[in-house]
Image (cartoon, rainbow, N blue to C red; front, side, top):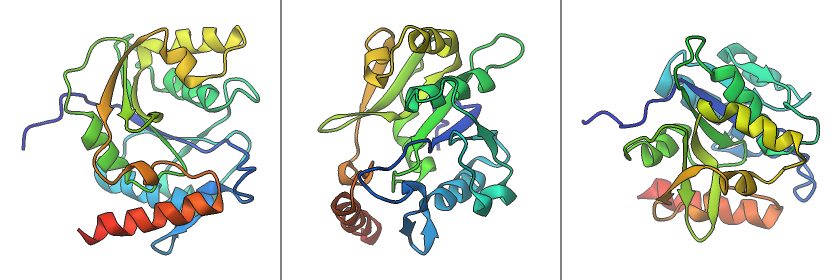
Length: 208
């Protein structure tokens, strides 16, 4: 098999949201008998070995994944939304020699496995300082590969009051990769009906 064109040097799982519409922490929703956060972490360890794995969860901690050698990151800015978690992950993943690194970013509420998201995103020629993310019926910027060269730019955007991930991405080089068939409903959930629809779509995918 041809090697992916984009190599990553770490993985970041975004899990700092308050899950108001869901009513429970979305990272703890159960799929195939496992909380989503543990299911994702297991997949990362199986697919990527001992790659640095950042859990961007603000003050929240998940004892069920502590045996998987994860590193918790507080948000770069309190109440900064997912972009604050991305900023902290990019700074943490920046190589000490100043070279460019790349971080696979996923949200805690995706039902698609991290290695499958990576495979979908990594087959395009990389461009320095670029973000590659999934685009289906709508944009899915939290399913992306982010360049560490953008770490200071993200922090600067947050410092100016910016909170929108897409608002930030409008200012930098991006590439959109078409969401694979059947994935759209599985990529994020905000309510119990969303979760049930995602489960149905996910089980259809896994039956193929």
